[in-house]
Every structure is written in structure tokens, then in C-alpha cells.
Image 1 (cartoon, rainbow, N blue to C red):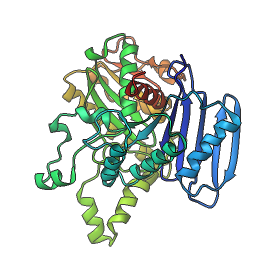
Image 2: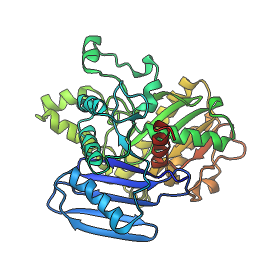
Image 3: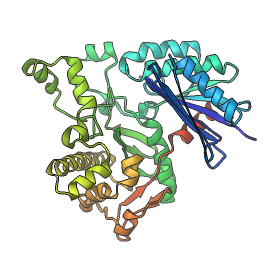
Image 4: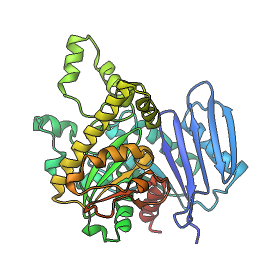
Length: 395
């Protein structure tokens, strides 16, 4: 029996969407709305090999979601048999520790949590309300990026900050990319041929945004992102870990405002700040051409990643596999090699031919004599969201 799910991922000025049935091999349709609220908005809708593009104006998310529904009406496939709508919801705080049926009470709580994710939760809420307006007769489910990391022990999620302040403002490590880390860890266990309950994994989600997790028996025990997605690894435009005193230093010595510091660390740092590139293919080409800034940027990127892997190895008390996923993790074989070559003392060793080979399938790229495996597992957050949505509505 077909059980198609409409999945929505709403940003401040965009909506990514897919229609898929978890029992089918791929999505029935995919699309994206961009530049919501600007003078010229666009919508791209793909059904199989057919692509449809429109330029118009969407004043808000309600108009944009209505346009998405109209695209399905005009170009298919039909939404008549959709059983639910799944919404990617970035921050669930400590309240939402699993995917949840969306009610008015849930939306009100998400509004309260918006201070923890001011760039992400408000557009997500707008998308939920818009989708409820145009698709009122099916259940809507929130799938939370933070939910997988609700299992972190207190020693991992607690910041050493005055408890009165942290309690009052719900300050703690929450973690993000949880849907990806959950999906990939399960697929990695299958790749190893072992029950996930018997695995110790380090999952490296490396994209423009990047995070790493320690997963013990299918349960997350630590992750690199924190209260916000800024903490942790070097990313495309985000700095990752810096001295917390940097904020005060730049305010006091450089005359910057807090907003300017926040913009610097989130949008003008990371690989972009170090060498001007966010795409690892561009970084690789620049390194090969002798660009020293790109060489240093790549070294900093790898150094940070190796440091986290070593830390998580210690926390796990052993390791079955290091798993690479997302855009960089799945495709940048020089990054994987640079990382794994520095971890040979942990029993990690690559088969260089397997590492260079391109594939969209989960694969083991370890040398035959490696005692700890290196895996590449393509992430599929949309499939994981659809599975979560079906579970919530009891299908």
C-alpha cells in the first residue's frame, strides 16, 4: 500500500521539498522555492527527468507553500494520496526528544524555543502554519534535528557556566544534524554486518555545515555542535571552536558589535575565511596550484577533525568504524585520506583505490589489514524523515 509523505525543509527565504514513499527506491518529486519575500522568487520542480521552473513573487511562506501544491497539481505527481507532511524542525530544545505530531500546543512551544535558533525555528514555524493551511486534512509531524542527541549524558551536554544562568536560559549542548547521524549510524551497522547495539562508531557529517558524533550501541554520547550549530568542526563559512573570549576581544579592541562578531563567525569564517573557498574541489585545486592559504586551511580542517576523532575514540573506549557522510565526507577522497593517514596508530588504514572510487552506495574503503574500518555512507535525511513521520502516525 502506497504511503507517500510530503517533506518540507523551510529556511528563512527558501523551502526544499520532496514527495517520497519509504518503500519506493527514490523520490517521486523534488523541488525548491528560493528568494521568498524578495522581488523575484523562483520555484523549481522535478518529476523524474522532467524539470519545471517559474519566476514569480512570493511574499511569504504561505504563498510559497501554496505554489508548491500548485506545482504538484499542474505537473504531478498527485498529492491526493499523501498520508502526512513531515517538517524538518531544527531546534526542539529539551522539550522535543523525538519526532512529534504537530498540534497548536507544539507550535506554541516552538515559538518559545525560537530564541535558541532564531535563524531556523521562525521560518520553520511559518512553513508549518502555511502547510497546515493548504493541506489541512492530513497529519503534520515535526522531525527534530536535535532529537538524536537528547541521549547525551549530562557530563557531555553541560557547559561549565553558572548554573543559575544555564537553567534560566536553557543553555546546554543540543547538537544538530541528528537525523543524518541517526540514519548513517544505522546504515553503517548494516555495512559492518553487525547489530547496531554492538557497534562503536564515529560519524563525520562533513558538508558546508559539519558535525561529528560518538555513537555507542546506536546511542549518541557526544557531538561537536552545541547550543548553536557554530560550535565544533571547521565548516564552509563557520569557524567552529574558537576561544569564547574572542567575542569580548573583538568588541573591546576592534570596536565590533556582537551582531558583527556573530556575522563574522557564522558567515565569513571557516574555509571561506581562511582561503576564500567553501567547495573542497576548489580548495584541492588551489592546493595543487601551490596556494599556501588553501594548504593551511585544509590542514586546519583536518587537524580539528582528527582531534575530535581522537577524543571520541577515548570516550567510546574502543572503535569499530569511522564513518564519512554528506557532501565533503562522501566525495572528497583527499580529505578522507588526510584524516585516516593520521589515525593509523588507531588501526585505521585505507585501501587507496577504494577511497578514490566514486559510488552512491555504502562502502568499506579500508585496507584488508585495518583493525578499525573506514566507511563511506551516503546520508538520506529525507528518507529518515519519512520513516520517522510514518512511525509517528502509526503506519
